[in-house]
Amino acid sequence: MNIAITCYPTYGGSGVVATELGKALAEKGHKVHFISYGIPMRLDRLKENIFYHEVEMSNYPLFEFPLYSLALASKMVEVCEYEMVDLFHVHYAIPHSVSAYLAKQILQENGLNKVKIITTLHGTDITLVGLEPSFLPLVKFSIEKSDGVTAVSNFLKEKTLTNYKINKEIEVIPNFVDTEVYKPKENCVFKSHFAPNGEKVLVHISNFRPVKRVPDVIKIFNHVRKKVPSKLILAGDGPDRSECEKLVRDLNLKNDVYFLGKQDAVVDILNAGDLFIMPSQSESFGLSALEAMACGLPTITTSIGGLPELVVHNETGYIAEIGDIERMAKYAIELLTNSNKYKKFSEKARKRAVEYFNKEKIVKQYEDFYQRILNQ
Image (tube, rainbow, N blue to C red; front, side, top):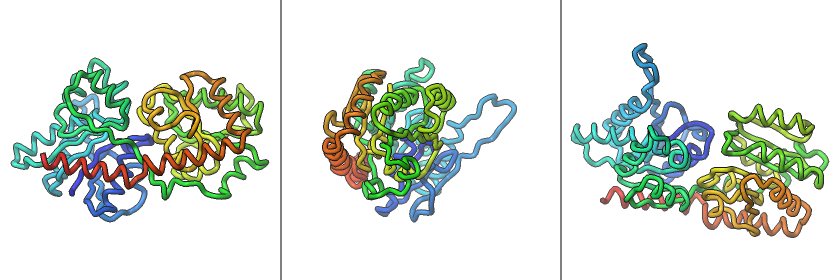
């Protein structure tokens, strides 16, 4: 197949999944064309069968705001005409699905009627941005006009059908992880750097947006360190970072908390840790939690969105209500002070990632879905 993928190239779950999917499809012999305004973060080396097409933006005094959606549609048309693309797989309804629909109409006018559109819904395009009155009709239209639609969790599927009153079949294909890359490493050399005296290490990775509730991670850690010698690794960056740094100073935790910023070495960071903390107030799947589980880290998360579909309470980790800092801290202390229980949770976390969310299984689901849509 000849597949064009459009995603946001920034630090976030949707872009990571889209890029890893494209790389996996290329390894299986498909041609993959990434179309975006920047090279996706995980597209960090030359790969056979992978091509990148930059969406070029023109600035005219008449246009107060950049017209990215239109420029994207134009680039999609160009790539499809010259590369004979079979389908557009767009990640996020806004604006990618809308741009793909416009491109498809232009291509049909030019006699190229076979191209299909598959839209994958990841979360905030449905639960937050798409519900804005100015966007809601457009999101509903773009989903209904897609030839195929997938969602990363049952939660997100039901939310989409309910919020937008859509009469459209939505296939649930969860996020995935390469369990041959994300796996436990014995005697991780980085752990001694973060915890030189054998302290336990808590880890959180996110884009530091308010919905991630990173200050809650710091408050949880503050409870834990009073009972268990421990350190905290915070990887990522975003609008809440300054607030988090101030909170660390106010709680006198400066010597125990590491702010790493945006990092590519996620596997090394996770293998330096013992527990993964995700206290989000909105999470349609929780890719970073899955990556942690694949590395054998039990996870402590909130009970929202698609997280209960990923984390099995009292088996691979623990689930608590949003904002229940004391309970999440209690769960962390329990695991960090009970080596037998920790070992069982760690093994089950890894096993669940391998059995249900491994790359080969999920990529095959996408391939089958592509073929079904192309045969319609």
